Length: 452
Image (cartoon, rainbow, N blue to C red; front, side, top):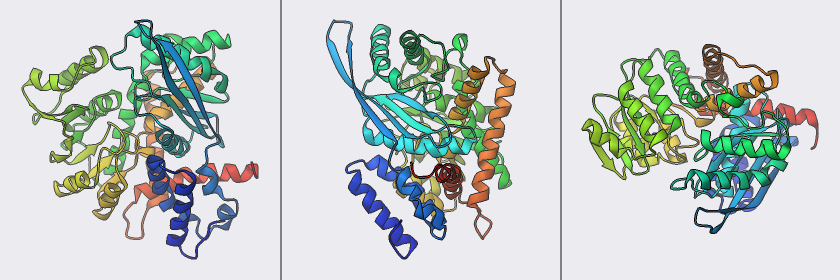
């Protein structure tokens, strides 16, 4: 039962307890606060959720698995990394969430991602719980053989904790088609069965069409719905996108298709500004650059004679719409203030938690249309869920049918955000709507199970 006579007292006491139990996990604290700030007011007079301690239970993962990953590099050196799987909540379906290979992977980052994933998966309407995993392994600069050996070593431990009815991982940062293929091959060898235990697989062995496109397309679809609800369109709008990986590429592709003018993309080295707009031909260059040659975005500036801003983020460029699609906490308070000052109308988060809390506060104070990542980037896991369905049914849906299903899921998420986020003055608090909309389904399932 929460302690405190007012909403603010309950929120403060709740966060104090969370930080005491989870010291030094700043990303996790941030993700929980963003949700708790919406949920605690919602449940303040709903004793059924308070008496069952639902929110407290949802901030404690079901389990966290940590393991050693030993592998051999091309020079014969034995290398050691740390692997993780955070199985957060399976109240509404098997655990579902990506695997991330990156040098800064930590318990805090994976706990925040798994926590977010639980609510995101709930919003899709599909029967999926929340999880996340990964390793502090950086595939950049590694040979294909080294990546293969690492993936096989990683899966040799992970396989005993996952399964099509238990936990179905997918890709994430550093884990693309190559890594998923190696991981799935090793699982198949160890388990001696062919099941849909991973999503994001190749089309030749159980993958789904439009899985690569889904997160970026979904972020644009929900922006389209948000603008339509407020009598606006994407057509003719100037758009700033961060990132140049999978999510950013397909965000740009769909935005172009709907008539927007995208003027920036970025990577860890800086960003390019193309005032004429990135068209499909230029985007194809970026896809080749990033997917095949694994080059730097600065090469775009050289190829198309535009300006490259070294070690900077693109939020200083005036725009109508912003899509942060790179990584967590890429928009701070100063960046958010710049976007507001430059007349940005709306923000749709393609990356996971890309805006710091102070930036979110500024967006909401300024009445910018802001839709958080748990709603905006749910398209990727939605199509992963559809891949699971296709695997279970032993069939494949067409690109058109999958795109229609994705479009409907994103529209339903938008409508759910409006249902729970509409304010008395007629405006919509999409953050509040996404948090409450995702919470209710999970919380009601947990209530139904009793104390477990």
